[in-house]
Length: 384
Image 1 (cartoon, rainbow, N blue to C red):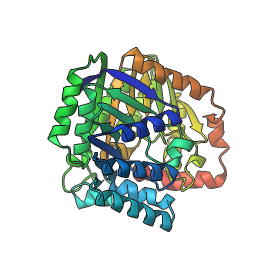
Image 2 (image 1 turned 180 degrees about the vertical axis):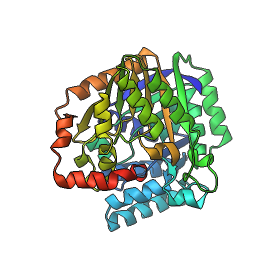
Image 3 (image 1 turned 90 degrees about the horizontal axis):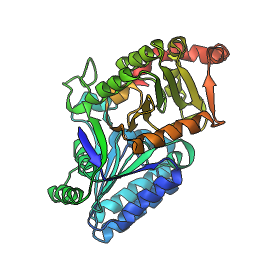
């Protein structure tokens, strides 16, 4: 949908996003909504939970929307003691009067196939909002590259509405309050907001056999197909759904300069399966002329920049789950104030010593054990 912002602040530096997040929580006086794929009980999670509890205790209506599957998946990164401590902290937050919701799709098959939400939004009554690529974890603030956008204006109530579409409960008076604030500000940053929760559009079999449409994926395909000179992409692991993969390959084959920046296999110590799912498509991408880069410390931002003049950023990873199992959100714009920060990010990535180019020779030099794993498991890309 077409919307706008009265201000737009890019948050690429990790300390800047954290400061913005915490400032919003500490300055809230009426309400604070926060949605996350998961929250880890590390120093960042503990600080955030303590700030949310303090906000609730001073009279702020706090709502935290976690994804049921995402939180369970993130739980493998925590010890049993940490998981118990997290449960205790959430229970204290609830006892203080906060709403803590775990989003689970309506159909059993969707829940079994890891359906959920992957949207990271934070909104307060001050009229400020964040749309982020990352979660509240040490990985997002001390490890991987992430990208967040702080906005004000008409886009803010639109973002709050999405919280309701991923399991939250938005009070009508909160929505009215934000709309009134937005009406008082001159909104001169044009934006498109793309959102889809596929779980709300599927039948009894969920993602099995589902062919869409996913409005967000469709917009991404249109954006890729519109590129004429350059197409620059960041994603956690690049393993897009078939229609989006085909669009990227088409772009490269018609002479568009295509760059894909994603994570090295070592960036996710818990498992290499996500990398394997991406690596299975390396030959196809390289044959088409795509320039592939792997970031050793992890690339978790989600940015698409076409022809240096149209950008989309948000939560959508280039993977099948983003198309048929997870709610996702992206902001897109042709305004130079939104495009220029993304352009600078790609320039930085090209000069990052941790960001290495993948070539056909790189693939040929894989150890035999890696080749076997890619051959054995790469065919299951959709579920990894």
